[in-house]
Amino acid sequence: MDELADARVEAVLFDFSGTLFDDTGVLDPAALVATAARHGVELDQVMAADVIRRTLRHVDSPEGFAAREGSDLSPEAHRAVWTRLIAEAGPFGPDLVAALYACLTAPEAWLPYPDTVPVLRALRDSGVRTGVLSNIGWDIRPAFARVGALESLHTVVLSCEHGMAKPDPALFAVACERLGVSPDRVLYVGDDPVKDGAAVRAGLPVYLLPSERSVRTPRGLTAVLRLVR
Image 1 (spheres, rainbow, N blue to C red):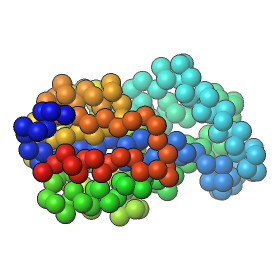
Image 2: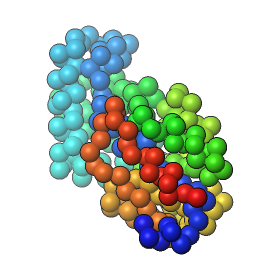
Image 3: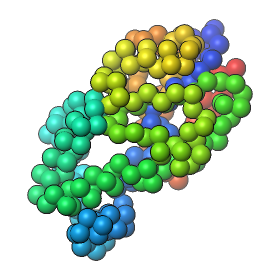
């Protein structure tokens, strides 16, 4: 981070999943039981946990990762790819697939790390412009609004709204333009060395968080406050 010592950081861009909001426990058996009931499917928590386990095993397999390529370029692509993968995991019927997809994209399913909201508010209060830049297939603004963090953001740039995704430098350029700050004055904070680290190709300094994470443990975001001045 030596380059930060020579350049004033005027804005901070954050990744979403795994950086500000936890991605390790989004699919919850209790939530799936309730959501499935609204879709006309009866499950108990043991059954729901098994559905989740089988789904994650499939979507996180090498084949699943390959199939997910490009799914964040539009809401339609995301829904089509993920519902197909969920259906294949069982195989599961369309009502259960719809319930599981609803759980995946529900604002209440995504929980911020303990330091997320305080750090965003501290940056806002100190006059540092902030934003979120995420590869995602649906609108995540309601997740921020739910925890009172949306008002701390100056911009939210989503791959599904622009038809391009990280590591494309053009998406980072869009976010910097939205912030109204030169890329060399925008710190990018993420957790993926490839997709988030690619911000350097667009001229942004980068701060990468460790891969170990838990929704109950601060993510280490307070370090960002020491990097802006």
